[in-house]
Length: 245
Image (cartoon, rainbow, N blue to C red; front, side, top):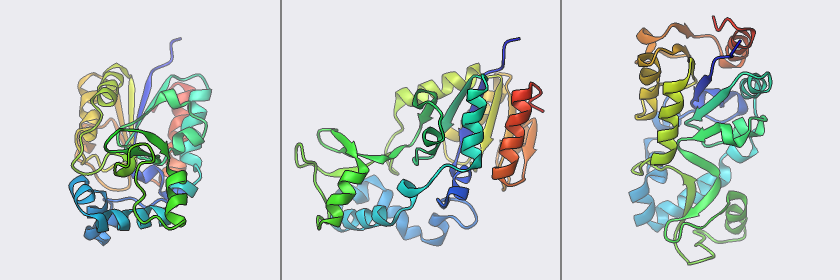
């Protein structure tokens, strides 16, 4: 019997058990410190050297690069290893799905990755760790080593567009899947959030795993409020067993 294609949209909530705080939840970073949003807003970043210096210091203290996959990430990778066709569409930039063992080609990073830097002028890329080592060595705002341009995290900042190719692939996967699981996302940030609606419109079984209500709960076939670290592995065991229910 052909196994259903599972598309999983993951948000910040899947990584909180790995020690990475969310941004828009009740205790999210943007609610606690709205000024912090400027550090990841493109126009502020490009126009103000002091914002860039603060941004590099924020990256130094960011736990993302030191985080390890948790049980939820491992469960997703395990579902793929069991032979179920899985594609992950993630709003996260932490790379933990890949570190858990999911092949990189099966992960679409809608908002880019915090594990690399990119030059805003020549678009050269390099490891974030190398750039942070330069900051540790005393460079407050390290320029691109290729052309001297401004370096930024290879993430999609506020004010930047998503990569249209990546978004197009995400929409195609969403339209093709039979089961669509939205986990740890408030489903408030467009266009990623509307993927849940696209999935429902195309006949997929829509399952939402999130602690707080989302705008798409009334369209879901199942809404799960239990902690993600236990709820998602149990859900994926059901999917692997063939019920998905």
